[in-house]
Image (tube, rainbow, N blue to C red; front, side, top):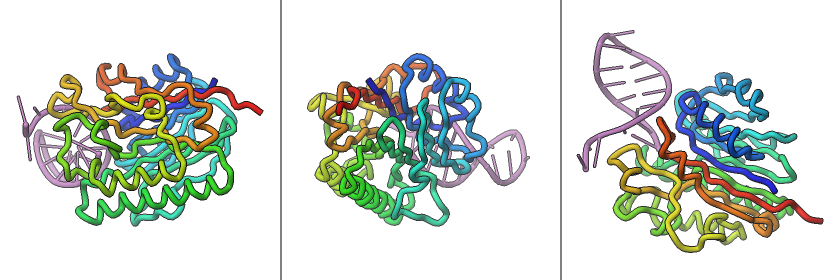
Length: 261
DNA sequence: ATGTCTCGGATTCCGAGA
């Protein structure tokens, strides 16, 4: 069995001990982190090495930043999303090959700041992601795309009243861009196993969102077709949100049967 | 319920982003 997860930690320096506890307890093969909010050189590589994990880090000062932790051999395949460039650069994508799969780790722009240019940048990222996924499908590559997509795919993925209808996370164009990834043939791991029901991965720090269970499902694991055939479980690790000084996101965790043939 | 975090750059708080 293989286990991997995606987790927006909202600063790795603030959440290092939470991640260490999670690794020790759950021992995922691969963990994709977003919003590490530090420069690459400052990421606590040694701390995770001691815990048995290699770190592949694409950081920047203050904002964004992604990293992949793996306890297996790996190659780095991308340190940016092909076809999506900004000035100044934003650290929002890293990709490795490990355990026989490509793991893409993405932190999609929220799209609510920066006016129409900010929202256009979100859609441009989703377009580039679809083209990249299409290329990997054409190449016959087995892959997973993990991360904070900043999209609630349907109304069931958004607690009633949690967002206004024109929020960038629920806007029709955002949802259409997410569906395009599914139409390529990718599988939303959680919905493949739990077609109905509320499974949130994020609760805002504000307005007692956790206490009221006013959450969102915005952290997703999309699987290429042969990987989807191996899907065993997919659930958010909801308990993480109730711990002291939590991230506003919890890990979204997937397990796969071992590859056959 | 504009109610919370985090970062960093200003000088013990403030703006920006989420």
